[in-house]
Structures are given as structure tokens and as C-alpha cells.
Image (cartoon, rainbow, N blue to C red; front, side, top):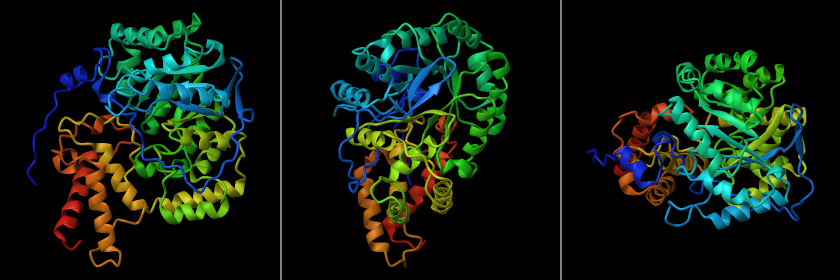
Length: 456
């Protein structure tokens, strides 16, 4: 298929999005509404305001809500570039009223706008009534001067003079860890900031292979990491290695040995554990008909005692209410229920979904491809049974129509997989280490076969 070169200059993209020179184009995470849908069969009744479960960070005495607000997916207005501050304020008000007190953001979230919006919403409350986390996201310009400017800018935008939790963001290789934090002296600077009280807890977030995790964790003897943020959920507990990540069972155990508090990201795998294949959903609902599918994932991470908080990017009030219901109060899983989830994870591992968490770290594509949109539509069709193995399948006609019609609705034609040139620029930014061009080309071939009515 002919490729149209819609190359977007990344400097121009930064300019259009209003981003300062401090930030990297690699991390223009989207914050557009996700594809997560609340299970309409869940009936919560009254959402309690006084039943939130808390975990104690014993080193500093923080009583942290086990549900943390991930500020990566704040809602946008219809123009797609302006955050909906009024709705963000309402979400923050509801969260705080129902016991949520941990808010996690980054300089690069929501097209670089998350920190400012989060700061506006939280500044209406006493500073000691919530815990604030942000990150050193110096992905492309990691000079000491630029990194320090990023740190100071975060403080201004978040309207604070200290951070409760500060992270070295997205450590995925030893070489980049050394370049971004060691060789430039910025880790030494952050440790001094902790001594001065402007950082209360210093930690890091991890995406990578075991060698990288072990290397950074070994710095504990020097740095005394106060917490570590890992990807953990029942699918990744023992099956993450299938997606080229490290099993969460190993990560958690290593942190538990050292009594390091654990912050959880991706408890829902970017929504994939709330939007599971239909027969998996039925399996979970049979066990707990009154609870949502997503609640299983939250109860799983909450059942491990070293977990300080589990982050969820809640774009809609329905997401927030459902998640509060899971943790207010938390009903920890029994041993039998954990084994049931591990069996469920093994079943799900047989389904050919792409391990995309919709983080949008791969964006912007220089050729305009809506990478997450393509991958999420494909996954949605897998989950709903609208992916045929053969044109001779009984379900082929229905599945073909559902895939093609849904694809054109979900992804603009000029941003579909056919425009991928295989440049691989996206691959180095993907925390799940997906071979994105390979997946896009595979999906594009499937689409062309559907359009032409070819045999598979």
C-alpha cells in the first residue's frame, strides 16, 4: 500500500502544543478519554465517605489512601488541547471527599498540562491534607541545568514548596539511568533536596528488564530509596515475561525484602483488565456478581501489605466511584481467590491482544499514525469476539463488519495503520517494549484481507 508522508516536525509539534523547551516530545501522553467502560450491571448504592482503606508509610508517618489518583488522563475539552479544569476540580473534590489523598502527576502528562491543572485543583485545599507526587521526566534533555529547571517548574506549576513523593521517571535501561541521573549529578542534587525537606520521599518508576531493576535497586545502599513504583496486576504477576516485562511477583518480593513501600501503576493494565474478553467477564461475574470486573484487579493489588497506594487514571466520575467502591473498604482476596485470578490470567494469556496500556508515550508519531487508537481498537475486537481466524468462520460476516466499521469510527483514515512507514521511532519510547511497527503492519494486513475478502 502506498505510504503518504505526513511527517510532523517534532519541534513544530512542541510549538503547537505549547510545550516549553524543558520537555521531551517522547512523552506527550494523551489524557484523552480512555476506552474503559464502567460495567453497567454494577450497582453501588451509596458511596461511603468514611470507609477508605489507608496504608501507613512508617518512615514519615503518612497515612495514604490505597487508591491513588493518577493524573495522566485528565479530561480535555472538545478542542482536544485544553484541559477541562471545571471537571478536573469536580473529580478532585469528589475524590478528596471520599478519602483519596494521593495524587500522582508528571511534567509530561496530558500534553505537558497535567501539573498545572492538578496544581489548580489541589491548591484549593490545605497543603497538608493531601500527598503530592511528581517526576523527573528528563527524557531528551538530561543536562543538570535542564533537569533542575524541570524540577523547579514542577514546584511552580503545582503551587507547592515541597513534594511528598518524587520519582526518577520511567527507568528502562542502565545506560539511560546513568545518563539521566548519575553522570549529570541530578540524583545527588535530589538527595540534597530530600535532606532539605523539599522532597519527603525519593523513589523511581520502573519499566525494563530484570538486570535494570536489580542495578537501580542496588543503589538502595547509597540512596536509601523511600519507595519504588512498579507495574503490578494479576496478569503481570506471573505472565509479564510474555510481554518482555519482569514478572511483578519478582519485583514485589525484592522490594518486600528491603521493606521498601511499593506504589502500583497499571493495576488495570491501561484498562485491559476492566475490558476483558466476554467469557472472562462472565467467569469473574459468576464469582462476584455485585462487583465490577475492574474491582478484582484493585482488590488483587490491595491484598499485598507492602503496597502503599495503587494509581488509577480516572477520567470520568463513574471510574472514580467504582474504584472508591473497591477500596472503601478494601475486601482483601483470599488465597483461593488469588489462585482463581492466576487461572484467569492464564486463560487471558491465550488471547492475541497487543499489550498496549494507552500511555501514549509513543506519540506523536512523525507520520501521524494514531498508534494507541489502532492497537486499542484491535484489542477491543479481540475481547468482543470480533476477530476471525478464517473467512470460513460462522461469525465472519458479523466480525468483519464490526471490525471495519468500528475501525473507521475509532481512528481517522489519515491516521490509520496503513500510514506506518516502519521508522521504529516509537519503539524506544514504549514502556511495554512492543514492536509497534510490526504490530501495525500485521493489523494493516489483516484489515486489507478483510476489505478484499481474502482467505486467511
